[in-house]
Structures are given as structure tokens and as C-alpha cells.
Image (cartoon, rainbow, N blue to C red; front, side):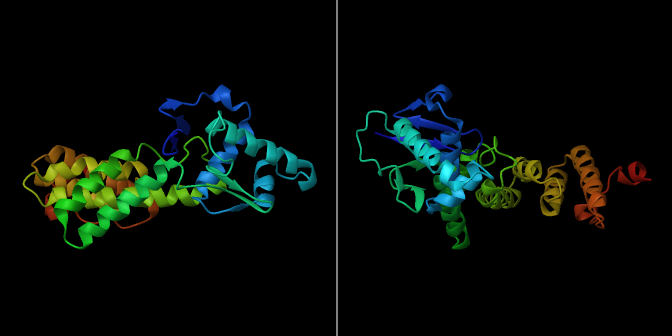
Length: 254
């Protein structure tokens, strides 16, 4: 049996190639518990911590059984036929609970491993091997980690780690494209970075330079104005137009 967990973008569980319907969960808390465990990335989560997160402010003695029920629900969803030992996918003892990353396919783990592998190869100068890996990794980044849980503090560390890995990969691809014969090939990568962080100065200037280098001066001027506005929001002095090509900017900026 193959279990895949999709956590980049919208959360879902795929069991033997079929997406598990939301109605099959029967418990929103069980679904949230699995998300919590995915965010822990295989590290054991203390039971008191899980109970306080899922049932804040309630007496631990009152919710201990609820946690056990939620854990049982997760196991039923992942292995409804009970074909595997109970601890195969989710390990639990009297103190803590954790998912088994050696038994589950988690997209977050695959993405982070591929991004790190590709960047390591680039640093070693193995461009032909590293670039395809990074391209595959960035393509697999289908959204922020657990987008449906934007306000949950427990999701932030994994979300930020995934976002940083994606930005590093996109920046590497942009840098490689900009050094080639078609510099505007870097533009899509810089745009993706700016979609995540409109205030990324390196990406803003890189986008302008790539467009100007390809002769797309109108687009370059427009994005330079956007960059200046972003820097003004931060109270940062903007850099000069890359390469000194201001085009019609003097008139536009007054």
C-alpha cells in the first residue's frame, strides 16, 4: 500500500492512487492532527503539546481520550483494511506521537531533499546535473506549505523552510538563465520570487536587468517603477536602474 501526503498548497492524502475524501475523515481534529505531525517532519510531538494545540485551554485529563480517538481515526484513514501494524505510518507511545517518514511519501520531504541536492551540485560546479534537479523541485512546489492553515503558528517553521528552499532554487535558475544568450529567460523565475516576496530587492533588480538585456525596455521600466515603490514602502533608497538604461524613466518619475 502506498500513502502519499500532499502538503504544498492544499492538503490531501492519496491512498493507493486515490485521494481520500474529506467525508472519510469524520473528524476535523484528526485531519488537523495529521497536519501537525507532517509539520513536525518526523520529530516526535509530545502528547501534552498536541492536546493544548488541538484543544486549547481544556484540561489534559479531559482531552487525552480525544487525542487517542483522533490518532485511531488517522490510522483508519491511512490503512482502512488494517493490513499493516498500527505503528507503521504513525508511531505513538504514552509520551509522544510521530509520523513514519520511511513509510509515507510526503511531498514536503521530497521537495526539500531535491532542492538541497540540486543546490549542492551547483555549488560543486556540476551544472548539468544540478539544474534539472532544481527545475524538478521548483515545479513540485505547488504552493506554500499548508495554505489552508495560514494562521497556525505550528506550520510556520516548515512553511518558511520550504519557501526559502524554493526561492534559493528559483534564484539559481534565474542566475543561470540570465548568463545565457536569452537573458529574459530569467524573468519567470524572478517573477515567482517576487510573487512570494514583493520586497525582494535582488529579484526586483534582476528582473529589470533581464528584461532590459533582452531589449524589453518598456517592461523593464514598468518593473523598475514597481521596484522603486516597494523600496519606498520599506524606507530604503532604491538602486539605480541596472546598467544605467533609464529609458523613459526620467519623465515618468519627474
